[in-house]
Image 1: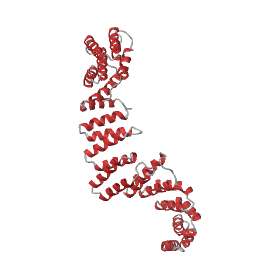
Image 2: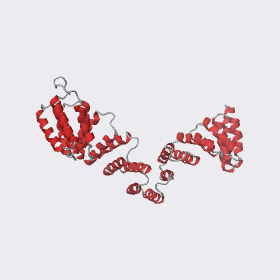
Image 3: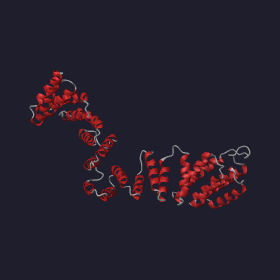
Image 4: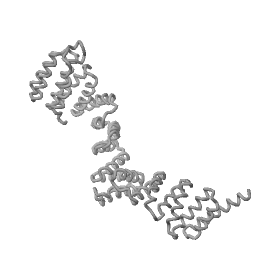
Length: 407
């Protein structure tokens, strides 16, 4: 355990000694003059690293204070910090436990002491006692930082309570803007212990995304895929890991391509989006195109349309306009499809307008623009690749018109 510095160890003691010198009868959280002077003398010896002399003085002072009193609790607490300074953590924990048992300290001091004692107990291998005390502390700390939950997760892991360990470490990760690598590794280990391989794969994917230069994670991911009889996927991961120049600026794009190859397009899109937002990769046309394709493959059409709309001004070929129109058509959003289709017809070279004319005929049909629909479908008949489809739509249009005339 990291050694407590003398400055930290004496900090709370100084706060205690700073209280007014008056009798205990006036206020339960005030020190008598005699106790104050004795604690002050012990503090000076601790500052001079005269720990054994200070220990003797504090032990004597314990016997001179009233049982169950605030004064005795402060003396026991001070003795605990002395043992922490000398790295006698078992003795320190005993003093802190005795101080807490008196229920005589102010609540804020009691809370700090609970946390310090929980750290000592867990460090000393008294995991369940440490967990109980830390849980008690957390119940009173709505704004507890991530480190407390990491400590709790570590303790749970040590006594094989892996479900609780995962829950605690997830809380730590959620509460921190920059989760540490070893937190994810603890979560991964807990899932592996419980043979929760799908969850372990999810954690490994996060580790690879955040720390791609660690080849171990790639090997573990490949091994897990193989363990689940996904040999082709396992082989793909292994081959990619070998080919990937880990740490290269193109890492994110190659990882995104890997997710697409493994039929996990949603992960690919998430990675690309986050990397653009974080400034890791450029928000240029090529990267936006990969993002749009990933959203489309994941059937996240709304997200895809937002990306494609942003790409329109970057593309003078008309292809992006046509792709955006196709997505709107797939969602039967005919009004939204009309604009991009018109833009594609203005930009595409004559030889490539067949698809756009045919789709415009469809859209105008659904918008009730029958004359324009017929005109555009007739234009589409000139293009071999859409001639049959355009003919079918023309017959449908004509039948619809005839039915209306007969009605």
